[in-house]
Length: 153
Image 1 (cartoon, one colour):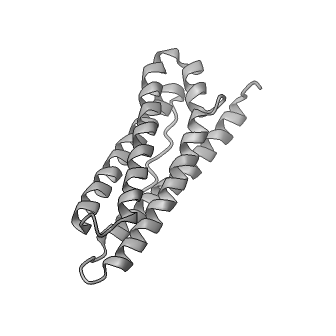
Image 2 (cartoon, helix red, strand yellow):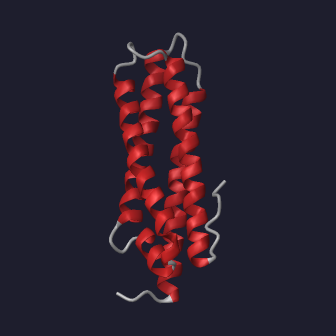
């Protein structure tokens, strides 16, 4: 299917919406992490796990859409072949980030084995990596189409 300027703009609007959903999930996780854990570890862990599950689902959707055969990454490379390495880097980050999310979910399933502070540190590092990944994705889209998809703050 050939992409017209209007379908490309519709696709970019969809990306903006999904980007905002992922950012909202990241904010929910950050908020859950900020809650006090001492004396309420079970409740804290449940809240953090729920937020991470939501983020995990939004991230899987992001990956599926970005890496689809006619997804935004493939179209970026077709539009600007010089972006192939940047797209590959983002795709590699998808694997790394998904692995990290799954490992952290496993750690949350056994909270007695991992102190809350250690869980917080790992999840905070995950958020930092996701922020940088989103920035690189935004830069890629700008390089491909000179379109600013926004930070969604």
